[in-house]
Structure formats: structure tokens, C-alpha cells
Image 1 (cartoon, helix red, strand yellow):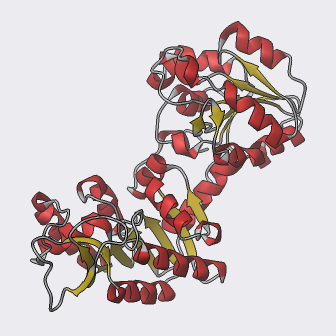
Image 2 (cartoon, one colour):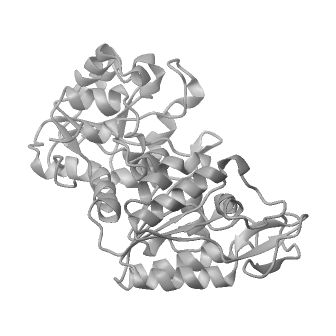
Image 3 (cartoon, helix red, strand yellow):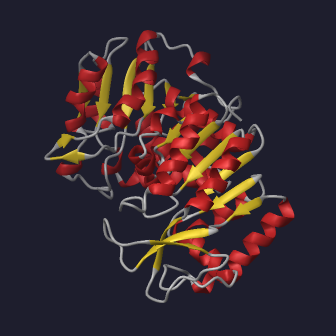
Length: 400
């Protein structure tokens, strides 16, 4: 897969206007960028284009202005921190099409960088309107998509432009696609998946796709309760989608037919309420039951030991969702320890460990494990749709 699209290595950049779709939908506080992770992610692409003598024209969205000019959703606050990271000035145009954009782009020297205003100020962006895409394309000679996180949307700046100009994957996009290919496309086996989250209903497509591709699947979070309930386990007052019991049984049957071994909690940590430092008890589900007033908030040490043992045998891990309510101690224990184990194996070169999704990134940060994972995707929706086996319009449009 990673070889089916063109990268910047294939492009003649000198003097060309490169329209680059980036993800600058960054956290802001008091009108200032409070986390520059996404700005930093774009630097390798910007630097490569500048070094090749291209004029770098950045396109991005910020928030959801729904086709109108909303002053507090302007990209202008990004200019100063971005210029500091690049170590060079960044020009700003207060529109992404028309005369304002053209004037700024025309004034760029080779190696110069400009940021155009929020593409979502125009209704044509989310509608993938051909006229709007053509107006964007007027300022470029080639197109670079470096925003995997927006690749599941068929918008003018993600899909429309790629159909109008010679299209390339940026460095961050390339990294993301290669990591996902290593995790699900052509993985080293055995492959393990860890899937957590509150509800089975939101991860149905994911589970159905994964059981056909994995050797082992550990299910955690609230959704594990639904699987336990479906097998007749007493789960007390725990979060559970009882109407999904048949579906859970179908997924388990599909996994068995595909030769995917499913790991469900063998023991659980329960409490009567979710609060820091609350009194807890650990129940072995083989011989104990969850009380009517108790709720499951994490998996127990026996389950964690199984997960660690399977991890040690595997060559690839793909992770989406925590084992327990990791935001509240002590229910972070299984997630943190499993993350640290996976990180140590990845650091030692024994495991390709790929993770993604908002909760997962936060959990890995809690465990201080992010840096040692092979790849951690910050692209929530796009990462999930990829894991579900769906085609992403922004990626499909890049394929040669």
C-alpha cells in the first residue's frame, strides 16, 4: 500500500507553488495556540518543500464555521508560533481563494511560506464543490496532502484538489500510511489487537473487520461488559448494552471461525461508585459474582497477566481504546501497565506497536509510553475508519 501513491521524492519542486493541506485544527486558549503538536507534525513536509525551492502555500481548517466567516475561528493565531518553529516568516492571506490569496502567493519567493485563511469559511469546502476546488487550485502547481486526520472526508481541499493537480503524500501522511500498513496491511505475525471503549455499538464495524485480520483480540472498557453479559456472566450495575448481546455472540463466533483468539476479562476490579481512591475489590469471574450495587471499572491482574503473556508472543500490536476508566485512579492500572509492557517490547525491537484514537493517545500519555510506541496516530476518525477497513477519500485520491 505505501508504494501506491507518489511522495515528494517523486516531485520536481523548484519554483513550483505547492498547495499543502495540513491539519492545523489546534487547541487554543485565550486566542493563542496551547498545544503545537500538529504544527510540529507538518514541519518535515514544509522543510522538504522549502529545501527543494518550492513556494509553500498551506491550506487548513479550524473548527466548524459552517461556510461563514467566524472571527474566532481564524487561522491567524497560528502564524506566529508556526513562524517560530520554521525559523522563517509566514505570510498570511485573509482568504483562501480570490485576490487576497493570489496576492500573497504571487509575492512568495522560492522557499517562502504562506498560510491561507480557514478553508471552511466557504460552504464549498465541505460540499467538495468543483468551482471552489478550482478556485483553490488556481494558486498551485502541485498538491500535497499531509493531513491524514482529514483524509476520511471528501472535501474540496482533501479530495477535490487531488483530482485537479499532480498529487503527492506529505511526509506525515507517508509516515501514517506506512505505520498503518505495517499494523494491518502487511503485518508481521502474530498480530494482536486491543480494543476498548464504552460501547460495542460504536465499534461494530471495527470489531467485525479486525476479527478477520488478527490472531488475538483483547476486549476491554465498557464494551467488555456487554461481551461478558452475552456469555451469562453476572455484571451487577456495570455499563452494558444488553440489546447488543446477540451481536456480541455473533462477533465471538466470527472470531472463532477466523482463528482469532478473543481475550475477555477473567477477573475485574469493581467499586460501588467511580471516584478517586474509592474502596475496590477484585473478583475472579470463574468463581465470584459482581454485586448488584457494584460496577466494573477495570480488568484485574489475572487478565492483565494474560494480555502481557500474549503481547510477548506477538510481533505486531494495534491498539484503540483503554481497558478501564483510566482517568480515575486506581482504574488506570491495567491500561498503564499494558501500555508500558507494549512500549518496552517496541523499544527493544520485538514488537511493532501502533495506536490511535483520542482516548488511547491520552491513556498512553498517562502511562508515559507514547514515545516508545512505533507509531501513535492523532487522527481519531480517520484512524478508526482505516481500522474498520473503509476507503478514505483523501487517501484514495492520492493513489497513482
